[in-house]
Image (cartoon, rainbow, N blue to C red; front, side):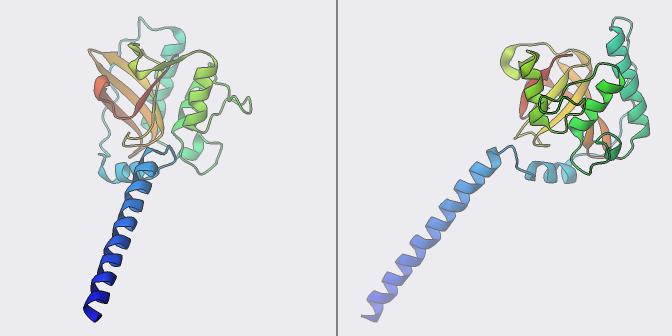
Length: 205
């Protein structure tokens, strides 16, 4: 009788452990796909290099006046590398979209928050809505060739989760961006465009 009870209890324990394990796996999968998942940003902040590359020498002669303004502002802010609150109107928050909004506003080509009408768009999801609303969102699989002044929009499994940055160079399949709220503050990154994890697409300048 005792032996039977032990076997029964052991079986119940194993079933319980299995159910818990399945629940954990299920929640993990759902959470990993969520745009609110903070884990990629936490991992990125620990694993990504904080190395600050030299701002590249760019031939701007073929760029529009607005593109040239954006490049100059990005170059200046990259050298200054101030706190993110400069771009977020003093609000302590993830500031990559604030940075993009601030740069374009300073260049005289402000964005427009679809919710408030402000030049500042503090969230990448709203930034994506803005570009969709004006017909200037090009999805990653659309075959669109990004250009200087376009922004890149990311979601999981990007190492930054939801994120955005500005393209300063696009040549031979390599896209160079300047972005805020990256390891080290404002950072330059070179991307091989077919391999950019979590790339949603481009906001066209």
